[in-house]
Structures are given as structure tokens and as C-alpha cells.
Image 1 (cartoon, one colour):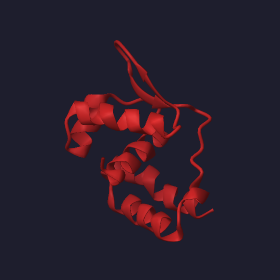
Image 2: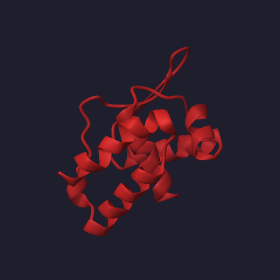
Image 3: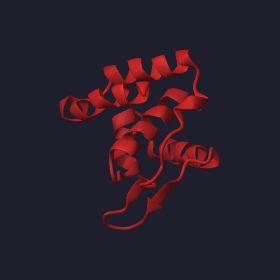
Image 4: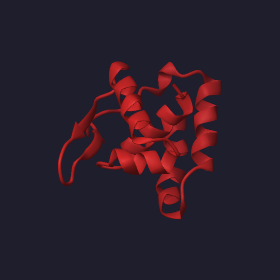
Length: 105
């Protein structure tokens, strides 16, 4: 299990309506099965992640889900903020730039 990858998946799902496992796998440099295992881990942790089959299917997180950042230490939160600043391509970066500010409260 790679906690950094799990956080990347969680962040990506929070910022997008629905995404396919192959897309996430390619984006994160792992295979599709790894993504499926990571989604199972997120579900076991109580994060409401859903999968949809068929055309237009994919992976999504419940619309009303809010991540409780109070469970993180200051160091962990700082690491996530630093990681968010360092990831993403140009179109994604515009959305991700706002995320660290939101996380600070």
C-alpha cells in the first residue's frame, strides 16, 4: 500500500465527478488492478467511493463527502499541501492550486 498514491486518488476523486480505473492507472503509473485494490482500501477506511459499470462508468466519491483533515498531524497536512503544489498538469493545476488554501482552513 502506498499512502501517497491513496491520497492522490482521494484528492483526484474529490476534484472530479467520475474517472475510469485505466485513466487513474495511467496517471499514477500503476496497473488497473492496483487502482482497484487502492479503491478497496479507501472503502475499508470508510471513504464512500463508488464504482459504476458500463459506458460512462468509472469511479466516483459521494458528492456530500468531506474529508476530515483534523485527523492529520500538522506535518502530515504540510506534506499533503506540498505534494498538491507539486502535482498535476496545466489544466489540473488551476483546480489544485486552490486545494492547499482550502485545507489550511
